[in-house]
Amino acid sequence: MKKNTRKIQIRQVAQNLFRERGYMATSMRDLAGAVGVEPASLYNHFKSKAAILQTICFDLADQFFEAVDGLDKALPPDVQLAKAIEAHIWVIAKNLDASGVFLHEWRFLDEPHLTHFKKMRYEYETRFERILHEGVQQGIFKEIDMKFYMLTLFSSMNWIYDWYKPDGKLSVNDISQQLTDLLLNGIKKATV
Amino acid sequence: MKKNTRKIQIRQVAQNLFRERGYMATSMRDLAGAVGVEPASLYNHFKSKAAILQTICFDLADQFFEAVDGLDKALPPDVQLAKAIEAHIWVIAKNLDASGVFLHEWRFLDEPHLTHFKKMRYEYETRFERILHEGVQQGIFKEIDMKFYMLTLFSSMNWIYDWYKPDGKLSVNDISQQLTDLLLNGIKKATV
DNA sequence: CCTACCGATCGGTAGG
DNA sequence: CCTACCGATCGGTAGG
Image 1 (cartoon, rainbow over the protein chains, first blue to last red):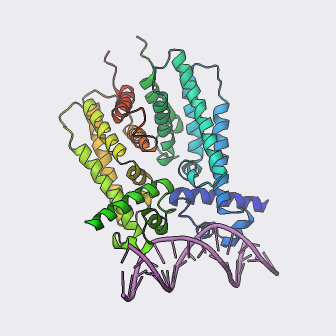
Image 2 (cartoon, rainbow over the protein chains, first blue to last red):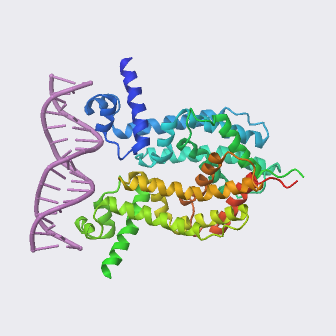
Image 3 (cartoon, rainbow over the protein chains, first blue to last red):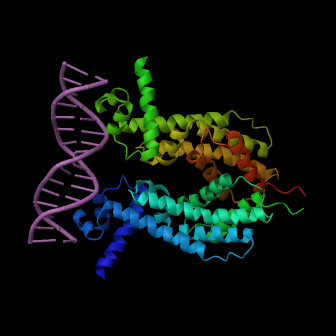
């Protein structure tokens, strides 16, 4: 049990260091120092530096899927989109360090994990794209350039990890409502 | 003259490698190999690896300032904003590799350059914020949360370096018009 | 622009 | 979980 606690601790410290300094710039000696053990001891919990990165990236990927897959697909597309945005932002807000690693350090995954990661991310983005298509088909959304809108959607959602502060004046609900409002009123047909 | 050509070449190859693999993950040996010289030869053109990063980051910063400072400040805020967005995106589109380095690898600048870089970036963002404030004062823009809007604005503009292809179906003008339309119609008061 | 080389640091292992 | 250590690679320099 104690071993498991230490493993969780190593992972949390690694998330923080990988986010702040980057994966490549963080040595196992840095990590060991921040945890408070000798470098060699880390290898009792993770078989390599690469394995730590894998754990961080894929565990968070699971959380993103869980959050979005639980949503009701019978709702109107605009409501679905609002809920999906909120769900996505909640995962980021609850995992700020891991999100930073997930979004910027994933490219240092080694094969076959890198390929796997890209596939998962593509699959995840498809869930949002499906909602947008549905909205266009139902005449609720303008006939947008789908790729452009998808990229803007994800860039604005994902950037939140960089500035969101749990103690700041904007709550997660505030943020997701404002972002949804901004993106929806830019895409939604004016009901003349 | 030949020396200068080689220096430019080193810098271009470095922009590409730093962007693709990251600054920390690119060794001077990698760079030398890609350029086609011995590692020691690089030091005839740049005094250190850090100096290459500085050149890339600050030269692009200059370009951003030049592009935005040339705009007419007497125009209506919504037109000003549209032009500023277009100018910003043009710089990114013309410097895709450098933009990737500028946006992701700046944190590996050493002091005092790191502090200088942050100040410049803040000063640059202020130019956009001023336009937004003006728009709110004139009653053209909704009374938005300025910080939130600024962050969304820059995240959606800056992400473009990641997916824009010079030969793709979306031109720079297409992109800046679509982004402006998306962001403005989300922020502009409906003229009832 | 190259050959030759430096001390420092890296990820990881053996063995207890 | 630690001591002791490995070969590999790093950024950079001396000298020509």
